[in-house]
Length: 233
Image: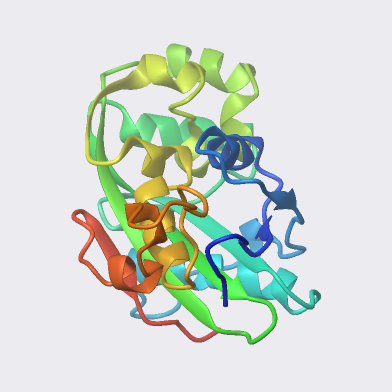
């Protein structure tokens, strides 16, 4: 699909400023085209794992945008927090945000981000997930209420943002930080390589490792991440 001098347009199916900022941080030019799907309106299916749930929603978002485009690679992502087997998405209101936070206080939970890349021209999809363990320090209802009053938790899975004031509540993480932010970059790079996209940009020197077959590089296992087959929506 690509050659050494060109890269396909990359489209982010999300209005999330933090995801767009991460893509630009690593030098990937991106066009923002948010999905029209209601992120809060989808429930887990019977027997569905949190990983499968996050993957399914990420793919649904990417396909929603890709189906309206003629070309380009569309990135969809979805992040959930899992504690005691319960999946916590974005809180519906301040009351639920406070309840989410108190359920996480002084405990360890998992953050799972599903990522999907869909080729608009062909409909081909590549999907993967990444999981990170996060331990919250102990805090009381008053502190949780003060954080909720800031407004930051209301559009975040699990009702906190590690890249913002929510960092004051996080004691320790084990795994990929960017998974918690909402876009695991190493996983995304592996998925893009499956489409022949080199995240370092096209190389122009003979023998430059950046000009190697991206598909071959992308086939290598990625520690800490799961590269899935496409899920059905």
